[in-house]
Length: 155
Image (cartoon, rainbow, N blue to C red; front, side, top):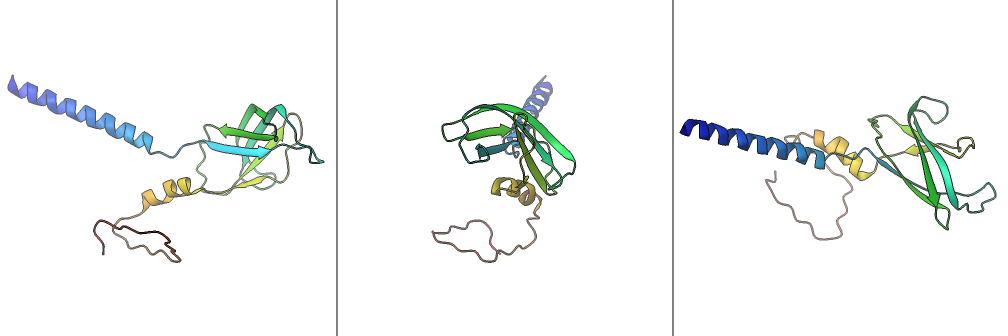
């Protein structure tokens, strides 16, 4: 009887740890959404306010190319013509260069396409997790203007 209780306790502990690690992994995963902000004007520069149908496409080339992602979203601009839209479920690796195309209502795609570049969060998520802790890495051009605290095993 006592052996069964110990086995049950071990199984419960293992399940709790498994659930913890699953949720911890999800919490630290890089998001698969992109925040897009822009200012909508007509060709003469007049600010456009109101509700518009936006079509966002991600391509693998600056012109032509393959369409890798598309989202159609209705959004309202503010008094300055500014829109703020989040593209969800962007499941692309971004290991190659990608370009964003934007269409408003039934107009043709705006030109030029926007070159999508990394931000520190995604760059870190895609590179530092693959670093080998046993290798030595060098940082050049580091300029520290505040206090620096370093802890841990220094070599």
